[in-house]
Image (cartoon, rainbow, N blue to C red; front, side, top):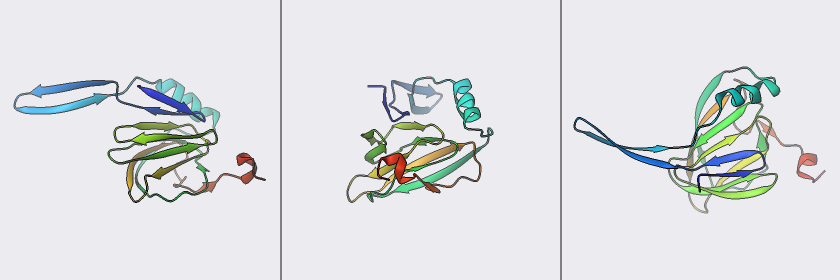
Length: 145
């Protein structure tokens, strides 16, 4: 399966594997499906965010918490480990090699498998001052208030 969708978010799984041989170097390359950069720019414009970026490393624990949202788009790569990715629609399992795209203002949360840590390499687009888990999702959006 190359991708999954849940709550407006997309989880990409590698779809093509290619071994590279350049001189004496041998490396492996895992490709994901193409996505529209124009669509991403449009997504940021609708959320009234500028095209800026920031990388982050998040060490996700096995602690369940409230969903949160970011003003800009969030793009995640999971280099190893596994866990669950939650949205308002439920959750899907995520694992090493998955990439996740979260549109602006979309409630979400990653949780590592019990007793583990799941690193996420994150690239935030738009909202340069938006920090991880900076805005909790109002309880009314979760149908609790």
